[in-house]
Image: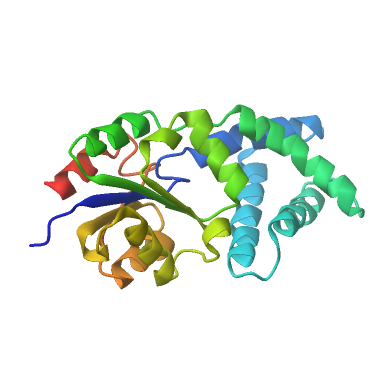
Amino acid sequence: MVEIRAVGFDLDGTLFDHRGSAIVGVDRFLESLGVEPTEHARALWFAAEDEQIERWRLRRINFKEQRRERLRTVLPALGVPAPSEVAELDALFERYMAGYRAAWRAFPDSVELVRRVKATGRRMGLLTNGAEEQQLDKLRVTGLLEVFDHICISERIGMQKPDPQAFRLLAAGLGVDPGECLFVGDNPLHDIDGARAVGMTALLVDRYGAHSEGIAGAVIARLA
């Protein structure tokens, strides 16, 4: 059996509570528009986010345009006219971002878990899809930045999960073979299939379901 010498983590939904932070941001944003932040309104927002982020991941639109498209989709559905000017859309999205950033948080066990695993002598890595500046800011705000030995962000490395090459770059940066790495993530396609495609051991976690109490037990058990 191959020894696990390194552990790679996804960020959003695995170590960073994107959904919890985004709910706060969405609610504040909708209230500023005079819209009640109902479950239906939130569902519209997150459906648009998933759709447009995927279009960005596939390089059909750029990062700023996926934000604009989210507003163009959601606002009319909530009875709010979407601005026609790009500058107005960008300013409006920044209103949402202000609330989102103010609510940024790691899951309660994330920092302790990563430090605990690192204390075993294993190399620690992060592989995340996203814009470099924003993802690094999340790591700084949550106290996660300094605990990783190597960080791969899709905008910086020029490829997105589940591209196998993204996982190979992570392993190379950690100084291990892919087969010596455990990868932990919350997306079955982007994280798990991508990791397994290069021979990594993969652990699927569900922070809002089966692992709502934390992922430490599952990670440590897999390493054992």
